[in-house]
Length: 118
Image 1 (cartoon, rainbow, N blue to C red):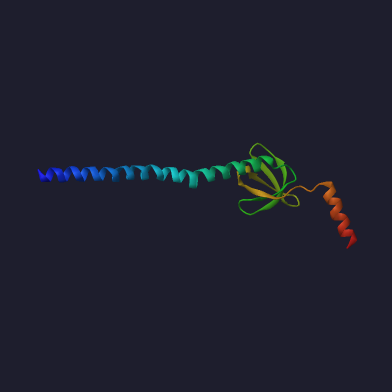
Image 2 (cartoon, one colour):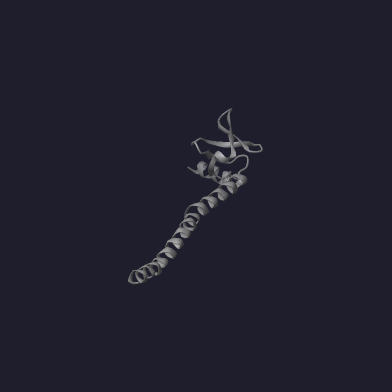
């Protein structure tokens, strides 16, 4: 009889530990979502938005480190001029970022005036 009481007491105390293990097991995928998956999706959305905003004349850098100016845009391709009369056809997803925004006429006039003064 004493052994039966001991087994019942042991089962009751282990049920709390089992519930904690279940909660911990459910918390791991939730933590992975908030720490890994969600930030990666946000980064992908920002990259897609940046690639959609690129236009002809923008200076860009590719994922492989090649700098150039966009000369034409096709469906999922950019034509990038890396040197005089040298153009590369690059997949949009491989454009890492914009180096500088296209210069406007006012900023070109200001830069020309500053260089004339010196």
